[in-house]
Length: 100
Image 1 (cartoon, rainbow, N blue to C red):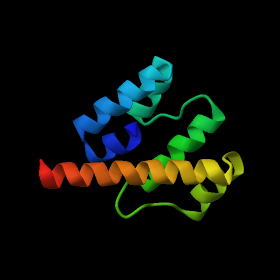
Image 2: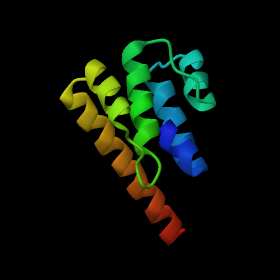
Image 3: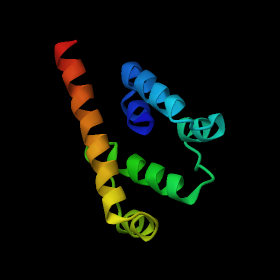
Image 4: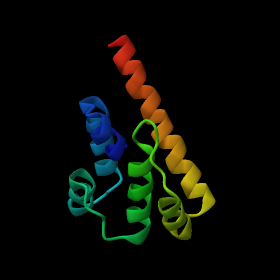
């Protein structure tokens, strides 16, 4: 959520993502890495962030290399979960823009 919120510069989504990360005990170092564009230290988290950064723009920018890197670390279920979550974020962002 934080990756997409930063991509589209949506403060509401950013605040919600930060609250969700905090509620789930994500450490400040990881949050700062994601916010600044750096890679988190944990391999799975880094793969999730890499994939989220690739699918956050419209149109998505998933290269063959990114797909190979991500799928070598994440399970198919994890890839789908990230894709669906970012899709929901995109929907929320667009609804916010439309409805205010």
